[in-house]
Amino acid sequence: GQRATGKRVIFENAGNQRNGIVVVPEDRVDCMSCHSDLAPPFPVLPGVEPGLKMREPMMTGFEIRHITIRGFVNNGLFTENVDGFKIIDVVSEDNTNYGIFPTLSKNGLITHSRATGSDEDSGIWVETSENVVVTHNYVADNVNGIEVSNSDDILVAHNEATNNTIGAAILLLPDIFDDRAGAKRIDMRNNYIHDNNKFNSARPGSILSFIPQGIGILYVGVDDSLISQNWVEDNDFVGIAISDYCPPFNETDFSCDEDPSVTLEFLMDQTAENNRVVENVLVNNATDPDPDPDNPNPFAFAAADLTLLTLPSPLSPSFPVDPFFHLNCYEDNEPEDDASFFSFVPGASPPPCL
Image 1 (cartoon, one colour):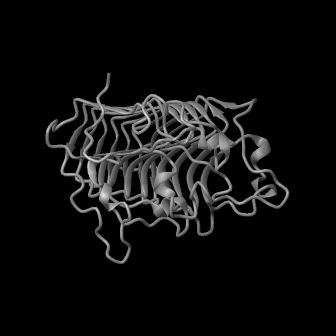
Image 2 (image 1 turned 90 degrees about the horizontal axis):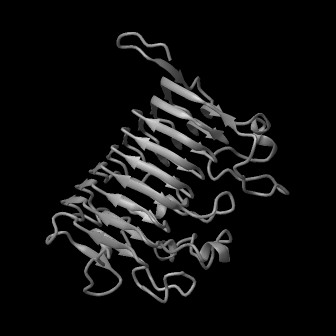
Image 3 (image 1 turned 180 degrees about the horizontal axis):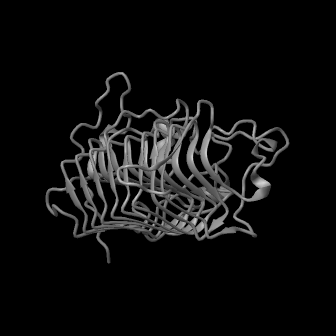
């Protein structure tokens, strides 16, 4: 965008447009040939096999700078199958579902950008991608401030997330497991995650609608990752939570027993394993875990600065060694003595890093 003092180039919904900027390979332009609706959860037409793969040839070298994208029904900025993308100083405002949304892409950078007002989902969402850096961004007034799902080798650093339902949601999801299996090495460091207590306005019946408000950092089903040197403050339910996928959705439509997208391969990977929570500062979290009497939080009992919701699973590779904690560990978090900890093991302390 060509900049002048106090002015920006703005892409704004003219009234009935779904997406602001879409960057996809040529053969993906006619999306309605496979989808009955481009609103989440993107249902496919009868006879169309669900799922997409990262594939060659990929688009290369996409870069966008100094643009504001405002008021679109679905996505502000969406990419698919892009190698080597740079999203710099992009402002997403009031794009209902997703603000900045790279998928099936790799070797990317999202920096010095803002994403606000994605009232039904995520301000910045990196999905089914690899080797992406998300740094020096501001996310506010979304359901998820920053979401990373079914991706590998992602760095989320030096961002600020505030007034979201969840500051940062790092997830392994079954419905896109065929697109990209696993979620590994998704590191969060030096972020300021505070006051994420916004009412959950996700689409009723969506998987996000079942997650309580007031969460700073949430890792679900993710492996081999580092959460370090973050300042996590004033999140009413949980400061930093690590969870297997199945326990939090046990009584919902997304139960591992009921959801048809949950395959045996997904069940073998749904435990959160070998994550390290190190040198984070936790201040005044878990002070109001059940604020809405008309919509009670079924997990209010798990409120804490540090929450670990992992259970023994014979399908987990770590089951014989560490059946309850799956090699997740904690070290040098502050305040060392006063930070609260919850796990399914009564009276347990945070398992140390060895």
